Length: 218
Ligand code: 5GP
Image (cartoon, rainbow, N blue to C red; front, side):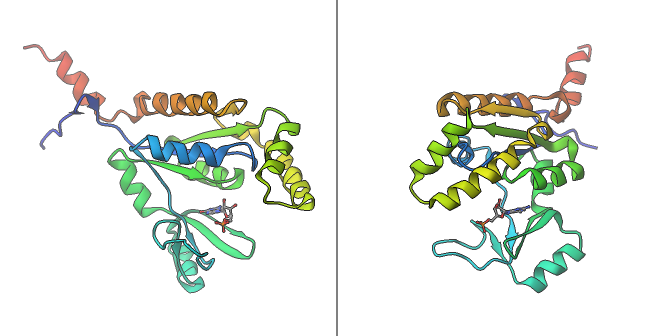
């Protein structure tokens, strides 16, 4: 057997992770997710499969893998999803194969999913999942942010507020909870969580060989 090099550049080889960001809508998750994808080249968005038709401007394989219901059902049957759900009459699922292969070679994936998807993913693969929940500083501030978007009517905002409170009740199903008082501070904390999680001993698959090398007498 040939030993793979324990280090690439100055970093030990490691297993990738599944980085989950959840929050009630308006708490800043999307901003943080986009910024993370822009600034951290080593993490990629997990692309779900869906039976929903593409919206204008959406690209197959980039926003979603757009599939027909028969193909989606076949994938469910063949156990090709980590998790799947029906949302507003359409099916959505996280395909496994691509992520499994990526994790093995140290790739990290970002998930923008709700608490139910998070729970399912965690049940399937506890060792690779890191769960981060973003909270608004107050309900008043959350409402201010939703109103400030200017995209929704009062009724829709009320519905989003009710949904937000239901979502917040699942805060204790996460490894980390960050209050988004200030977007820059919150983003910095999310980055720190990711950096520390990447360094976890259990993910550093190159450590065994590296330490063996350190202990070898010359
Ligand atoms: P949209 O159709 O607006 O892109 O997404 C509708 C909803 O489906 C969103 O709440 C989104 O989080 C959820 N969703 C997207 N992909 C997945 C997935 O792979 N699994 C689950 N459980 N939900 C998803």
